[in-house]
Image (cartoon, rainbow, N blue to C red; front, side):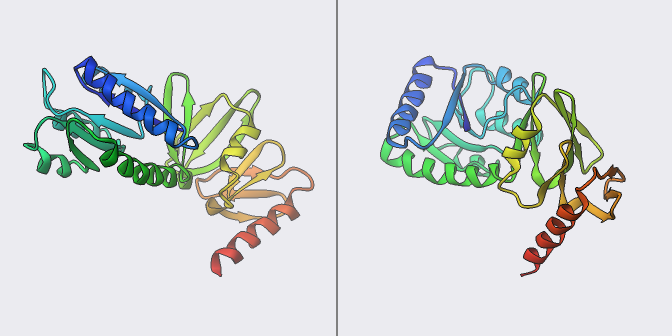
Length: 243
């Protein structure tokens, strides 16, 4: 699912933007997205900073009561958020500055379907490719977008899972191991080890019949019968990579 935020201080403009997105949804039934409306840019920034909300695409007005939408996006970029940006406003005055904050499109209102829909097609395609390289994981009220390459391994802990990251950090999420594996199933570098672990083969330093050494310094002791299937997966993955 894609998460779309609309930020505009005028309710009428929010209604128009949401309406045109609903028309797009009806014409693109396989495109799954949610829409979150904001009249207050500060509220939106706080939710994103606290990781309570992570948009994939933001429709941003330029002329807000207290500050420019350009400055809002600058702050957003300063948080490390790289979501796709569409500016929708009443003037071309800030078009050049918009692209300096890596905006994807700049529209002068009113936005027309024939102009917007091809842009959405391209952006959703790009976001879809990016999502395949990331997981969005909820930890309490916080949402963490984690790059697949940064996941070293996952370990089952009763009703929750510990996810060990390349930077030494950990995330604990209340999901089943089956659900996490389903999310990772399209990535051949992730394999199950017994019932308690999912490992990223890219982060394996060494393995023998008793244990795995991961490149973050962690040791995983292998359950009985898991060595030979793991060894086959390991060599199969790296042989495929070398082709």
